[in-house]
Image (cartoon, rainbow, N blue to C red; front, side):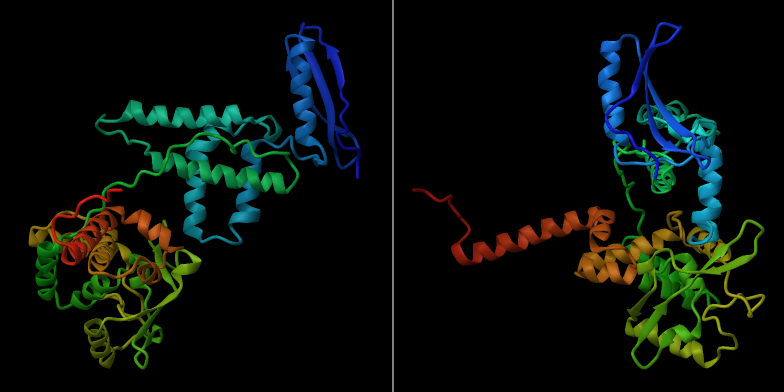
Length: 391
């Protein structure tokens, strides 16, 4: 193990008039030292910076790859960390964020040279781009949620660099990023939901599919990926353990669910169970909802999405996304009294707090309703004119 920063450093005045403080922070494979330099206009200004740098690197031994650029490291991270453990669609999404946003701004910077200030300026530019393009026809707004997504990805990439001892600290830590701002959920109200149910009754090839969706809240890829082995007719349960995705070339990919909690077993409503049992009697393929044209394959998520749009248009209903059927299910479940923890398990959310955060619009109304119930209960006990306590 090479010598680490021990509280001392080299201080000198450079020919350009600046003062430089330099310390050894590690060693290359051939034993050559790796230096870290800080600069200031005067020696007095330099010393606090130098001491802070010494404290940052104390007890660490940086390896010789810190001269990698961020672009070079992201490629190593993608092939060595992401691809072996993540879904292909997730890796594709990460590559898009890296190529379109991260590398154009910071890709040519050496890992050791990236500072928190650099990262903060990057985030600020992303947000300014969003503000400048808002309202311009033909241009896309970069939402706050996208800035957060880019931050989380960059943080993970650089955290791996810290773990690999390429840098001492993650420069994304302590940066200011936009807060979570969930847009209002688009859901079908009771009247619209009844209209939707009437509309799918006129769709014999799709009725079972959309009825199952509206009564379970499955993700689009999850309902397309259901197989008959997933249905336990003895316990009335449905196992959700795979998801269908459309690859860039149009081929269908069979993968795992979105999260670890996504693999789950849900108790089916009696009406949904009855529909699936009847459907099973005439099944000729392993898929519960096979493709209409090629039954040996599952229904494509894209086909299901397009069919939903056609049904909504024909019924005069709002133009919602497929995922909004999931929101519709969850919203009506909460409003009907299903507790957040139970609903979280049905939806495959990571935890109940995420469910509550996602459906704040519903839980707020539930709190108001609870307050009215408590108020009515107290009035029955003490009469309508409740007076404040007086000493």
